[in-house]
Image (cartoon, rainbow, N blue to C red; front, side, top):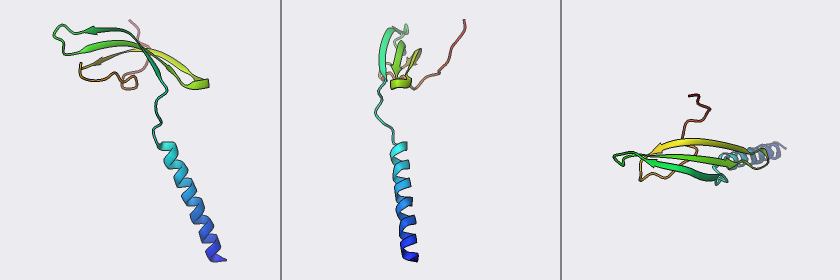
Length: 87
């Protein structure tokens, strides 16, 4: 009987750990990114990209932001400061 209890506990532990590993794995992004404008710095060392990002399915989201990046770097809509900025 002890073996059966141990086997059930071990099986549940494996199932729970497997679910946690699958849940923590980064899924491919479903974001739709629309570049609204780009401006290159005078010396060409930086690009300012103004973009709109939408996604999220049924509980969707929309945000606009500006990212400053080097010319050889790809635009990463998640790698920027988020929030509303007053002028």
